[in-house]
Amino acid sequence: MNYTESLNYIHSIPKFRRPLGNENLRRLLSLLGDPQKKLRFVHIAGTNGKGSTAAMTERILRESGYKTGLFTSPYLETFNERIRVNGENIPNGALAERASRVRRVMEENGALVSEFAFVTAAAFLYFYEKKCDIVVLEVGMGGRLDATNVIDGSVASVICKIALDHTQYLGDTIEEITREKCGIIREGGRAIAYPNEKHITDIIRACAESKNVRLTVADAHAADGYELSLKGEYQKYNAAVVLETVNALREKGYKIPEKAVREGLKNTTWHARFEFVRDNVIIDGAHNPDGIRALKKSLAGINKDITVVTAMMEDKAWEECVKEISPIAKRFIATELNMPRCLKAEKIASIVKNAEVIKDTGAALDAALSDNTGVVCVCGSLYLAGEIRKKISKTENNACK
Image (cartoon, rainbow, N blue to C red; front, top):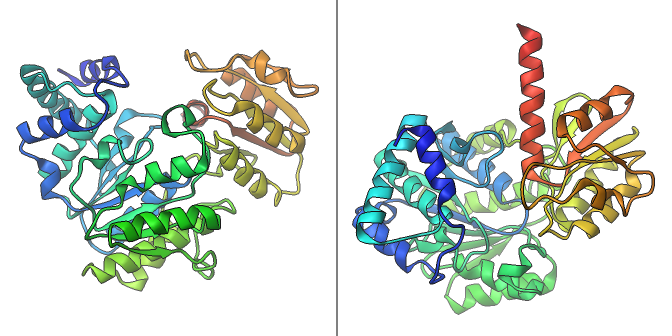
């Protein structure tokens, strides 16, 4: 398969396969030589902040001289973003070659796996064959049954901010969701947790103790005094988790100088997290109530009128999100994406007084900018964030020609 054929094939694989769990993935990986058994991991779960925490951790390790792998999801602009070595996306040819190999082994042996598990297997192959010293591995969803949890263990298991999301898969309560995410904690490792609410932290601590794993809960003020490239009030808490992860890695023998920590935090790039793509345009991928509340808190520090442009997926707690963010907007524009899961713009607008409906995302952004003297905030979906980023990049590239 070439690159385009590989992507088409990957996206044709079912999102879920029966039976649930990782038995077929373990079999597939065994047939591929178990590349994951020859790698070391920092494993990161949580509802919000996983990507930012992973990006900061990876950059610090890279600044320390380690060859790093980074596995994240979803992507914003190109699929290749999900698999990176030393900060570089997997090349098209390398992705096609690994996907072709995984497909052949999977189909010849009937070891059928889900789309995400397939990509995970291809990523493990690439990281092993590129001889990564350590891989920062972000959970796709949950933890216990996630494809990334096929690994035997990790140098550090990191539990980020936990909130209600994916309730149709992970459970209806914060307690159920927390236990699912704690499924990545393994005996012999170290566990680090975001400073969640006490009842959540108590569950994480009990899970760690049941596996004889030492847990460190990050100090909310640990990152005070560090320069962070990632903006947003919430990033200092994610950085605090990263600093504790660094301490855990040092305990395991990793040489991470303080200079590398400071340079890493100062130079991390992670798009669509309170990202100023222009002086007057912020893109944030917040798509659940907890993320929207964190975004709202960051926007409160901007003393300008806010125009909100949003699209949301129908399987999210969209009504709560919209009711949370709309009161701070002087102008509110509802848009939509060409995706089956996406809410109709009219439905979003129906619960916001004086909301505008502009279904085309590009036209929605143009309208927001046309008479705006304040700040435009694009939020509600990482898919929307990616689409708007591409539009802005294309516009600016054309302007430079």
